[in-house]
Length: 262
Image (tube, rainbow, N blue to C red; front, side, top):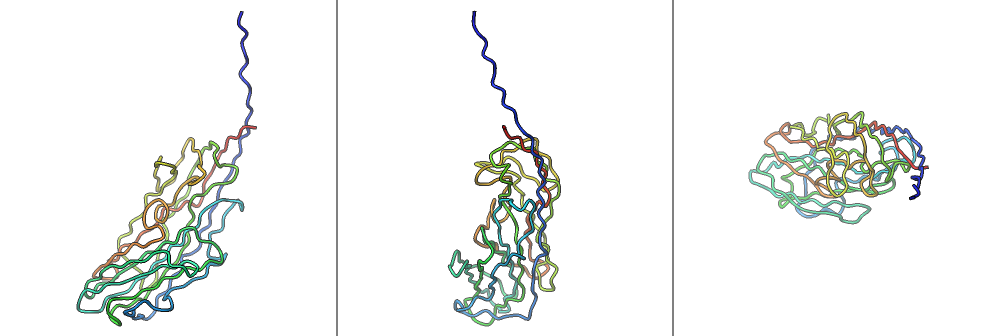
């Protein structure tokens, strides 16, 4: 007669957690037009050393994440011919990306640049110049930090019920010289490993997620899940109000129920 072997009993604990992300107000500056030179300048037109106050406030304090700096730049080609704008991004004094794009005569342009994986004490910078001096200008910049790859240490690689309860499209610019055109929101990646399981842009409940080592609970849209990543997105328009904007759907409240074998 065969002996039945009992199935081992594996008790588990249920951990309930609430992740809160308090985003800072986007920083922006409008100023008198600064003319771009015809060669790469020795000093960057925009440079910022990041401090703790620039970053979102998170709870719990041991939350794991990757911070992404989101910066914008606006100006105009005042020439009667098409001009080329050159750009170069720096992180801690080292060039990490560069390129160029064309702007038609009298058109406005905007640049959205994204630095991935920034931290307190690091310096980000942008240099701008044109193929002809003193005809292309720059008169606005903006800055905001977003968080991607978020998870609590207790939730990593464990099954959890997840509720993305509150999301906002950020950044929102209000400055006098800010781009004012159509907003293109990201497809917010709620969870992503080798492929995308789900995209959300509003409050969503997911019955079970397994936060992964690399991407955790989610990847933010612009700057991690899609371009630009350590690069720029550029656009031009006949008016400043016509310059398109891009925003991330950013979660600020996530509720988790984590199941952990004891």
